[in-house]
Image 1 (cartoon, rainbow, N blue to C red):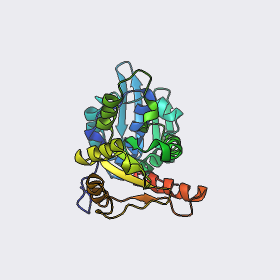
Image 2: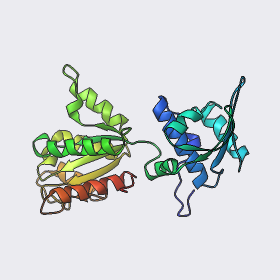
Image 3: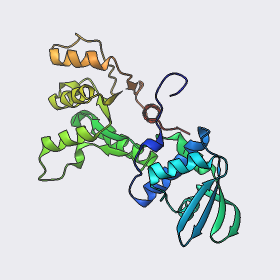
Length: 264
């Protein structure tokens, strides 16, 4: 628990990911996180023998070993992979099978993004916000290729539309809704936002085309008014007027920060 009373994420409580690149990046993140939290130091030893590979931490091997057992079942990614991705550098090489590594700045840079790439559902009105939805998708994927982002252009021909959308909504952690004055006229967009709010998913409104979320009771439709009341309780991002490439860029930077990414 942090000093402000909030429960902090602990990587030892998560399962190890699948896929080589994801495993390497997660392990490097965890090592840097442990150093940052004072659980262990940045100097590691790796010894390879016929019995397998043994990792040690020279500052606090007890805590480090507990982490290796709990998350990786004592089988973390290969040290040479971390070295090739420049998350480790060689501090001293005793032999080909006995190497001391030190954690690099590249590993600590991983702490500038969320510990797990978020799963995002983008809710929008096609007529008003299709271009922005594609821009959001492209910029988020460029920021972190591991982000899971769904916009309904991904639906394949022949798939059942409503069940597929319901499945994507269930799987997402964050719903980003692109709002203009026309958006909430869509029954489907209202359903998507209400579903996210009802299921304690994080909702981030991104308002553009001069739209600002009004107070409730400003619309003739009671259903829209109820949703406006709910949206007024969350922090929205606005594309400032006049709309320009610079102001869209600023709004996207605010979205990165809201998702936990560094803008450096």
